[in-house]
Structures are given as structure tokens and as C-alpha cells.
Length: 213
Image (cartoon, rainbow, N blue to C red; front, side, top):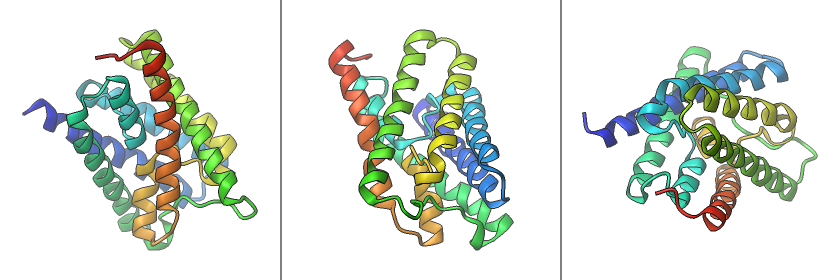
């Protein structure tokens, strides 16, 4: 199989897995801790299984930042994003089939949280996630288990503290699938804010250390 198609397939399946497990935990009524651990564990498993094939970005914002830093060839970015979007719909579709349309767990801003605050939070936590990814890749890039555990733990920690405020998307795909199928709003805000956060860190890393290519 062509390496590029293998990578796109890995991104599709990894994103579908992450969305299905994470939003499924919300739909099943898990506690905040349970939901946070579900998302973190899903990310950890996806990295362990798919990193060798695609890098296991499972996040369009991360892929865009990796294109800036040189970790991902620019020509492959559209395929990654399309695969991740399709995977998000597939994962949400699985939740739809198993649990029904009322249980899609779209990403929403909590009552009392202003739009500007939500944007700032999503930019900040996505930047923190991207910084953690780049840090561990630079530190122990050859160790997939360490990368998986570190990134998964970061996702779980950020979801625990910021999930009650904005849903802690940190990932356009996590929001795209559930919100699209549920007919919920917020797609533009979550996509732009999370992508901006990741790109800011990617651009800073490129300026400070140069391209990884």
C-alpha cells in the first residue's frame, strides 16, 4: 500500500476511535474525571497504534502546526485534514448508531462563559497541547510509549480543568463530527481558535529552532 494512503487511513481510524470513545463517554454519563480519562486514554492508544503509520496526529490543528515546523510535508496536509474530518464523522456516526441522535455530545460553551473567553481558552489550551507535543517529540521522539503517555496525560489534564467551560475541544475534528451530526453551532469558532493556538506554537518553534525537515 502506498505510504501516503496508509497514513491517511491511520489518521481516519485514529480520529474515529478518539471521537467515538471520548464522546461516547460523555453520552454514557461518565463523570468529569471519567470523560477526561476517556479522551486521554483514547489519544494514548491511538498514538501507540498509529504513530508508526502517520504520526497519529488525529487533530487537524496539530497537522497544520506540524506542516509549519516541517514535521509534515505541506503536500500531505490536505489529505491528513480530510482523513481526520472523515474519521470524526465516522466516530460520531458510530455513537449515533449505538446510542442514538440525542447522545452525540457536541462541543459547547458553558452557560455564563462569553464567546471571547471561550476563544481565549481554546487558543490557550490548544497551544499548551501543541507545546507539550513538540516538547516530548524533541525530548524522546524515538519512544512512542513515552510520547503516547505524555500527550494522552496532557489531553486528560486539560480536559479535566477546562472541559466544564468550553468542552476543551483542542481539536477541530473532535468538534466537527459531533457538532455536524447534531446540528450544533460553534464549528467556526472552535476550528479557528484551536488552529490558531496550534499554529502560534508551531510558528514560534519554527522561528526559534528552524524547520525539522
